[in-house]
Image (cartoon, rainbow, N blue to C red; front, side):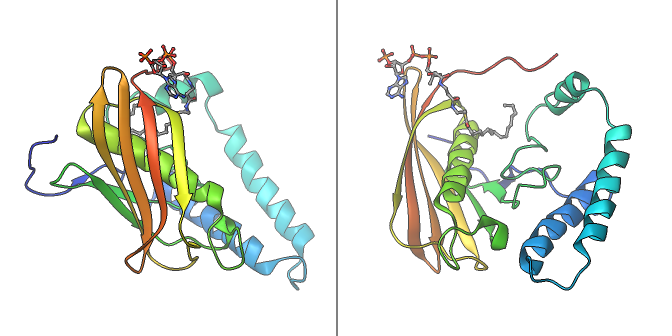
Length: 209
Ligand SMILES: CCCCCCCC/C=C\CCCCCCCC(=O)SCCNC(=O)CCNC(=O)[C@H](O)C(C)(C)COP(=O)(O)OP(=O)(O)OC[C@H]1O[C@@H](n2cnc3c(N)ncnc32)[C@H](O)[C@@H]1OP(=O)(O)O
């Protein structure tokens, strides 16, 4: 499928310790800290809310127009910085860090905390679906033929643990005309927790200009 490469290639934008990336890391910490604190916290939540709203007001005051920002988001070639799985500019991205491997597959590791909880102590099934949908999409890009998700079939083999290193993989299996078949999995401690089979159709929406 893909010619052998000498070393893994970054498929995720590298997070910087400055600028918006640093602010986003801080915001991720706030999200986790709020959930950890909960309703019974002794912290003065009215004051916390006022301070957070002041930060949001400041950001909104200095933000570009939405249509301009959309153009900016899609102006580069290659790796995105805004997506909800790997994006260093997106607070809801865990983030997962993906690299392309010699064998044509992609792989990343991530540990998920409280904001991603479903069953007690374990990852929400919809979050696993999000991670796999994106990882399969990136695997298609890495293999050279990408598209939009038409079907995503998930099998949840065992609960996926929070707070532990998870390995997320994706690999393009076949291309038949516009139909692209892709497979992937989330494993913990070497055991498959979730496996995914995707059908993607070669279609690309126009980039904002
Ligand atoms: C990009 C720039 C930045 C680069 C970054 C590089 C690094 C990162 C790389 C990459 C990262 C991206 C990772 C993203 C990952 C996330 C992906 C998503 O979340 S995508 C959003 C969710 N999906 C939708 O919203 C689709 C909505 N549905 C549609 O738009 C259409 O229904 C679509 C495209 C799926 C098909 O529509 P039609 O009109 O184009 O094609 P028709 O003619 O209907 O179908 C073509 C063939 O496919 C079959 N087909 C279509 N849908 C099917 C289905 N659901 N099941 C089975 N077959 C289906 C049909 O039967 C037909 O087959 P016959 O040619 O006749 O044999």
